[in-house]
Length: 252
Ligand SMILES: CC(C)(COP(=O)(O)OP(=O)(O)OC[C@H]1O[C@@H](n2cnc3c(N)ncnc32)[C@H](O)[C@@H]1OP(=O)(O)O)[C@@H](O)C(=O)NCCC(=O)NCCS
Image (cartoon, rainbow, N blue to C red; front, side, top):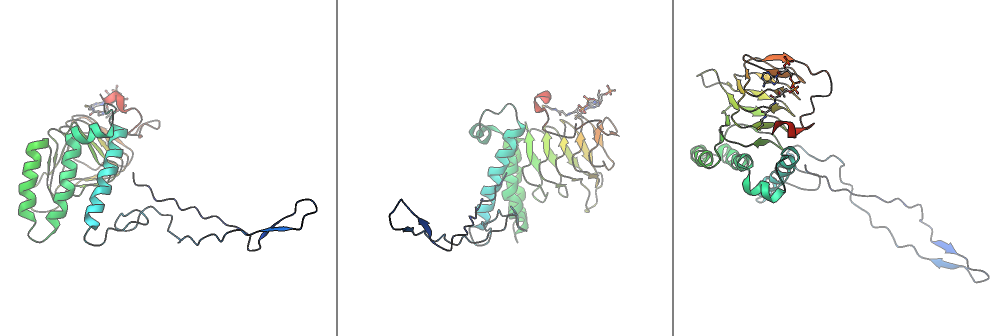
């Protein structure tokens, strides 16, 4: 997760120098050095383009900075959610899900540029061969997205995924229409989708939803719900079971 730089502002009432008096000695005046003015930085951690406060994604190196920030927070999110991971280095080197996401982050930028669509599709095919994860370069993925195990995941062209979402292997965010329209799901924030689940059509999956392994979801899922089965049945957890990171070890 990106951390806004903490700027600590010290306030001192001492416009006047401090005066120390030792016994009979004449008062000794201590000059307090002027506190340099610290520029006011907004406390909010992000601005509209997602840049942390004090950092800019403008200019020729902006895209590189942005991708580097995304990579860093992807790793942070992944290590919290993968109980089998021993270190960040291990994850960076061995997680096909992360490799697929990083390839996608670059290819999505390429897709948006004039003339970039064909190369983006070709390179996405290469990434699929290496990672076993197929993500259309036009798909819009949020921050700190994580795919555990990777293999067999398919994310379609018009899919949209929020922040802090986790998929297991074999998940499909697919379409049910052959028309060139919005035909893939929109997934909210903090959603977990279990292994082998199919989420099909231009449906909306609300925030904090959990979708069970091997479920088939073809209708909207309200925020906070658990959807399981074929076709998926919706229920609401009795307690605070919406916390997707509650006990990830139970999934392994
Ligand atoms: C959907 C899920 C999040 C539900 O977790 P939960 O809220 O703790 O649910 P419970 O274990 O209390 O089960 C509640 C009910 O749902 C059923 N259920 C749970 N998961 C199910 C699934 N995937 N498909 C169908 N029914 C399921 C249980 O059998 C139970 O039924 P019952 O009330 O008739 O006994 C979880 O079961 C799941 O599927 N997680 C994905 C895990 C995964 O993909 N792991 C891959 C690791 S590699």
